[in-house]
Picture 1: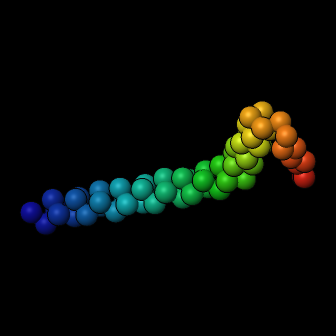
Picture 2: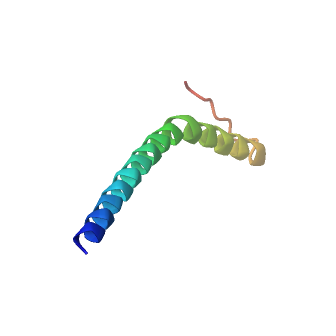
Length: 62
């Protein structure tokens, strides 16, 4: 029984470490999305607004 418990504990710790690693990857990806994709989405929204309302001219500053 003790041996069995130690195996379960080891597996649990392993799983927790894996989850932690995956979570850190996800966090990094979210940062990447924040810096790469959100500006693109903003540009897309601006172009949509321009497309729908020609009277509004947006100048994009970079």
